[in-house]
Length: 354
Image (cartoon, rainbow, N blue to C red):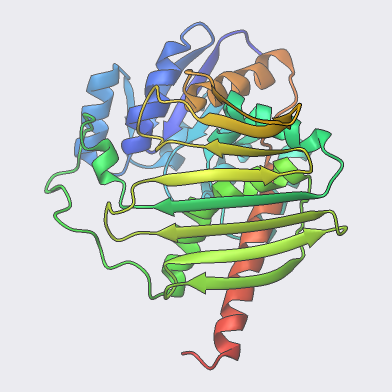
């Protein structure tokens, strides 16, 4: 493995411009961004000019055919199975934004393929790379039980959290004047609620509890498929619940938290919107100390989790560190999300809905 890596990037949308590309360029000590790929020609040119990137492509397959880089960073939306497989076939290591893909079969196949090729496929699970999450995980793992863990997310239309950021837009783009008509379809529940949003809660709960394949006691959609609720238990000592709700307006603000209640303390980890740069997550712990209720709050790192996860990716490739979010783990999350979807559909149909 060379000491300085070449990097190709697929997808130049908002999250790439706001987070990943700036952080990649900050790591000029270990990598050079060789080329970018984006289907929209205006965005492609604007991003290349803004970040000083020479190579530009509108088709990732053409980019991979022209002397592929050491690493492919996949930042496009949706199912990434095809792009990741193409990168592995080209002999590249891969960093891919969540979700890895939509199919559990595809996800497990990618994990096997990466292992057989001796390549790293790391999934962008940014919540894991916040020091406040590390602190919560250590608290939960030290507790023998019983433990109650609750993940709660109420997520409004997030444009208002990023409207102040300068982003290259496609021709004809206009700011949203009103929230879209959300909910009402299984496609929306699958792609937006589960694989775009609830995936964060699923992988965090897996890491916090160590349960890779939860056995659900209850799963239901929420408010006509605007959200999802799921509950599972383990060994009589662990109770886990998750609620994710999308909101049509800004009302209620952004809420994303993990609450762990043990026999000795209550821990609450609160995440801000990812678009509020330099606003850290906060972990608050309440417990009795000598008969007095004591509460302590501590912020996580002010380093962006998006930077921290890319730093970790390069440490994996260059220093041989174990990957904290490999494709093999992501495959379990893809399977869990599909099982939640199937259970929600079964419950809906058993109640005679259409």
